Image (cartoon, rainbow, N blue to C red):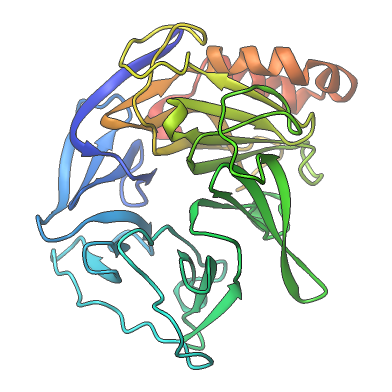
Length: 358
């Protein structure tokens, strides 16, 4: 595959996508009140949930059966059983420490989850307009909801976690208005750090260094760590759905540089970096592959084979396009730090594994 191409059409904007935990070689997407599981080639589609009264803006798969999702039509979080099709009533989310202000409204509801030690340690992080923009944390073990950080200056549009299992520090990356920020913990207190984009609500589509790059209502993010066999992350690429610019932006967190996928003209034209067109991309993810660093390794790496959810369709970008970005910005670093493992990973990017390998 040489560029951007269609996978399937949808009736509504695609808000969120994830690898299907129940069946290998598939992913799940949400669009309106619809949850569907799809094969990577887009040819095999099965409905998990369909309700005209729900609007599923984000979801998290707790396990192979249970899916937690944010229903923006009712401003609440629900749980779905894939086995029975049962949807639970809205969770009663209340803050014990502060009754002031609504936690959610119909624009809220980007959530991510992680359960590093199994279901009992489930944690949900949810974006909210509470107190002028917050990240809320739900801890299943304590059944408690707290404010991780507030006063962000608005509702975050997307959120991604730098997972410790991928060599990360547990920090979060968010899109907020027309910029990208990192939310990190220092001495037990959560704070934010500007990464790229305008702090003064200036819009644009400029590529280049972080200090000059501009966005226009960026939304979803997907973080791809790249590291050597036993060391922490050396380079990281943050893929951002720059919704109103009709582009996917690639942020190299090592080189501190931004590049774009597609021209920025709204449309559905397939093709290379410069000529392809998108229409309000809102979601993005990449499949993961198992590291071959050592026998029985369960370390995950990501194949830059991107699946993108837009307004009315799902599309994919192949590894050969993404590889051009690495040549442009990361080649000097790779030459000076190249290993056999990285060479193997490069080959896998250009010639992806069979779908069942992910």
